[in-house]
Image (tube, rainbow, N blue to C red):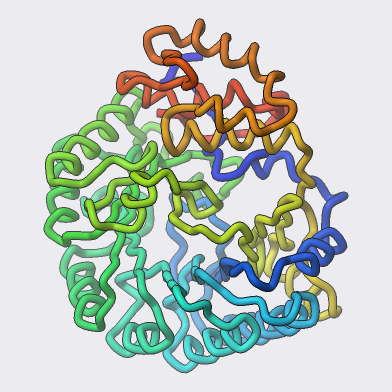
Length: 440
């Protein structure tokens, strides 16, 4: 399998969500939540699925709205879900991290921001070292919203940029000027938000190295603390809105690769440290420190410095990451709301982890985060030897890109673009028929 034609999971979880099944649902979800240790903080993810505009490149679970009425109704359901969680969780549990994603969380006006944040913190109070991050659309935020988010404890803002080239923006249905974006960044800094990250996407329609260089320079001028560089996944059979993007407008596989390398080199030259396969951080950023100290992990938001072992997903399509496995809430907003209104948790599919799954998950996470497998650390699993043929196989199949040094199997610098492909060798679910994103 070559880099340019390979389609493999992103491995934000193992097993990938394509392995989830309907046999694991609300009952499993409730049992897992009840068994949590109240002395160990949890992370919380809240999904806001609404957007005033639907970007054509996006494959997230979102829906458009021109009024706040459906948002208000959804917020009432979120609060009912929080009540169900209060009745399920052990007393005294606290929240180490909170993340609002979407969709567009900043579609909420200030009063709704306060209402939702207060409702969450009333049910799961913040721990002492609490952090709160929010995904922000610079075209749908103002000083009043930023001030309220800061008042509610927001510590990090994630700014969607994708690309600043006008023809690229027109092709993906997302118009966003550099002026608007800089104004948002300035407002966040003025409000005391000290951690900012910017999201870029390569492989978008009509992207060229010259135009992407201009976008990269503008992003560097914004001086974010962290940068995420994602490859566009063109899956129009899954995300119908992507049919508005002509296939012929997309860069070829080799051009995608060069766009990614161009951006990576530019950020390294600007003093950012490479983190995993697609992130870059300043030396003092929390994600950079996590990578340097061996604490970097993957979850459904990508790379994280989150040390909480449990992630509770709230809202439609949210996924909870629990010690016993994964549970995803009903994906469609209407189905999610119907379950909550009926007085039950909304989990509708998931996966119960086995001992072998945990072993494979650890190996994949090591590769995705550290570009190496620590065989000594992996040996704590009683059945670690079952991966011996896989270790030998990747050292042979990827000779020159993978080397074995005493008790470590390491991906070389030249092999790092192949990381997801190498990680797939440890995946026990490759027979599942699913459409994944390109590895390049």
